Length: 226
Image (cartoon, rainbow, N blue to C red; front, side, top):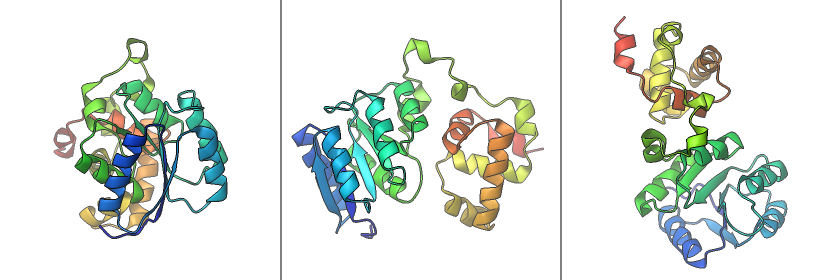
């Protein structure tokens, strides 16, 4: 991998895990500058001092976080710096809430090294990373099972999408970026962006992640045959 990103903050209060993440970044993203902290107050101070951070890897349970409240505080302090949650938590609703509150990815601490590297690369490329095993298997707390973003897309709504929009949505659901979709469908990236905006509007969702989650069980072949 090319060393295109060189300043990453690891905010986690477990020294051994910080060492593990540092090893992942050092081997997968050569030339990166790595900063470390073990609490939210320090993370906020580092963020203020280093406005050129390319990525923050944030533990949900370190001192000062108070769960997702710490994420919200950090996003308010530095809205332009991508934040990825790295946590032992594997509850589907926590993952979805983290994305809703502004995280661009969620990496579980049980992830293999190769998957962590892939996830970080995907996020640095401008995409959102979700742990597909949790999203698809539906590990969640009982009280969260009626969240709107878990509702599948109705056949009527799918039929309202043009063929090109269906193709774009299908590739979105595979985790492809706008650039990848443009290449694979042989269309301009600006055209892809226009299709994505139209898709979000027709699905009645607010962002790309909600669209991807809604399309999780769609059989696109069925609708593309028409």
